[in-house]
Length: 65
Image (cartoon, rainbow, N blue to C red; front, side, top):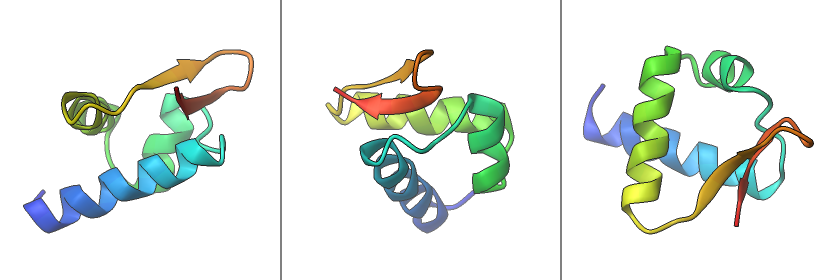
């Protein structure tokens, strides 16, 4: 995965999180076309950049805090 692809995936995850429509980790990884392991790496990048993101079991979606 190159930097451009990674940036696009990060932006997509943030967009879906703002709308509370990511689904579960397995659903989100399917939407993005990446493995769950790569999804967790993307989420780590988001968190490392200072954006608070977490998974809501109630909503079954990642959300921005």
